[in-house]
Amino acid sequence: MDWIDEKIGQIRKWIRDLSVKWALAAYLLLAFFAVFVCSWVIEQLCISRCNEILYPYGVNVYRERIFGNIYYAGAEAVMYLLSVRERAELQFLQIFSNAAPWILTGCGAVWAALIFYRKRLKRPCEILKRGVAEMGRKNLDFVIAYDSRDEMGELCRTFEQMRKEVIADREDLWRRIEDQKEINAAFAHDMRTPLTVLRGYTELLYRYAPEGRISEEKLLSTLKLMSENLKRLEEYTKTMRQIRSFEELEPQKGKTTVEQLRLRITEIAEALNAVGDIQIRWGDGKALSGKRLPEGQASDTASPCGDQESFWLDESLFLEVLENLLSNALRYAENQAEISLDYEEESRMLFLYVHDDGPGFDKRELKSAAEPYFRGTGQTSGEEEGHFGIGLHICRVAAGKHGGGLSVANGMDGGAFVSVSFFCGKS
Image (cartoon, rainbow, N blue to C red):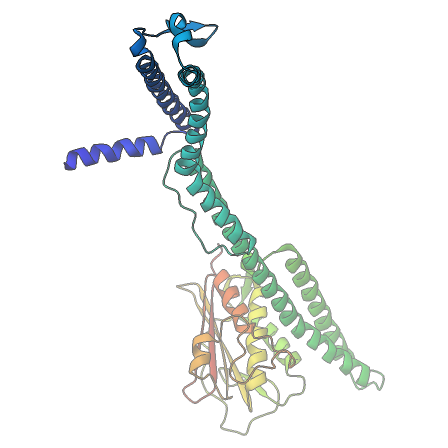
């Protein structure tokens, strides 16, 4: 029995997988065969009934086809002997026998069409109709499945593929929107620092230059720094126009040294800390800018950097990371912030450390501080304060593009401690 059931199942599957045109042809052939059989049976029944009527008169009828119609011959000689009812019945049987094949052909065609629709079209049409309705409601959380290899099954599979492509396109659109949102936030975030520097220097020149309180050397130095920041703004704007996503940013490496980086860091620290209310110092205790600390508070840690060792670095990307970290440090520091550089020649990794004496990170911030638009505890109004919650995320992406990474922690003596690494090989 199992073998028979298996064979029956295979035959049913073969029939179900027939193409629509061959399935329709099969249903029509089956219907016409049934029509032929039924017509023959009706004809035999009509002849039999005619013979029953004529039997008492000793006459048998037989078929005779004239111009496509069937006539019952043999009853003409006794027609005058028949009653009116018997003659009417014989005429009806003859007409019915001739009309039955045409009536049955029409009924068979309708039956074949209805059975064909119910068996082969109704279910896939309902599936497709439901799918179109769901898409009309902007709902793509459904599946179109029809287990058949005919044209309707192929149509359902094509529709399902289209649904998946629409989902993929929608996800891609949302990803592009998020990328654009991130780019806009990054652009606004990173434009802020150079603009702050330029505004500070402009106010300095406007206030003291007319009074002659700025030496020529200081004036030239300030103008040079302003020119460099304008150039950085120009380059950054050009880069933002060229990329669609912050993830597409690629480092443009050039040769530099720790000594050169320390000079640039000093310039940026002085510009960011123009008020001078926060002491910014190197890891070796030397001050960069800001108020002086009492004796004994400076760290005696020696810088491990080989200042003259050259390596390959995208300086613009490095300074962008530095500005973000230093801006955060100055925002939260109470009295001081510390910057350290460490270049390991063997691994060709450059490490930047920024440490402040502020409140540090809480548990939630340690886990999510580098996520985009994370403003930390109590930063719900960060945008109004000029804080977009994207600085550390930019640092992490930039470091990742440079073959490094970012980590956040709390210092042993309190405060936030952020380390960023950069791979400084040529490629």
